[in-house]
Amino acid sequence: MTDALRALVVDDNEVNRILACRLLAKRGWSVAEAEDGAQALTWMQANQADLVLLDISMPHVSGEEVCRRARAEGFSHDAKLVAYTAHAMPEERSKFLACGFDSVLVKPVSRATMIALLQDLGFPEPEGTSS
Image (cartoon, rainbow, N blue to C red):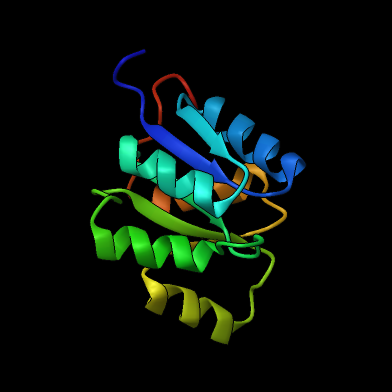
């Protein structure tokens, strides 16, 4: 499927990566994954994505730093960058949005929260599926 939407899921927790990847793949997305911020930056410099889910709390290079660098250096292209985190207090959400994220997805993610995120970001409903 060459016209599939493309996502990058970045999380140092393998279970969280697998869950997000499967939810997106079941909706027709082509999904790549990275286990840390450095891998994410390298991938983003060489590839384009429509959506990037960035775990906030990763060792060495945080999701916030990846977002700032991707926006500043211009290699986020037109991707929607989403803070993928368990940190959901209103002041934290505001901080993430001010950092350059387009939205916040709170862990643990579910099918319903993933669908709501994709709809909120304006991504089309895949053909042959229903919410």
